[in-house]
Image (cartoon, rainbow, N blue to C red):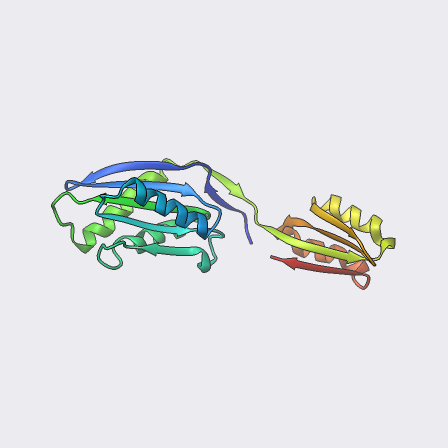
Length: 202
């Protein structure tokens, strides 16, 4: 997985289109549950709004399991999906957007709605400050105690964030590594691969 950007802080903006108020809120999120919680917080903030349409890319940008959206009563495909398309093309992850609409009495039509929700989201995106996210992988190294020195050198070389060392029949080291370094770690282990077991969750 590649490094990607996420919002570093929440932002909001408001625009008026043919008497309807469109208020967009964007927040960084750490997963789907946090995205749903953010959406519900906006609903509670605007209980009298006509619509609270939303979309999110709750994790790694290229993982479809992290995508979701809702038109919240607007005609199908006029709000949530256009918002999600914008988020996906932004390349950002861990991001959730909600656009609250107060209807102003003038219907916009399906094309007008698509443009309005897209414009509202883009106005907030312009305000965003971002930070880099380096995807991590959980790993476990298992080897005999005679290879302790070799493993410690690899920990230093690849800046592995060690979470625990277990001293059982063999030495077990559990930690996290930047996901893009996994292939290099596997290559570095080749000379002793018959004595070391590497397992990972990437």
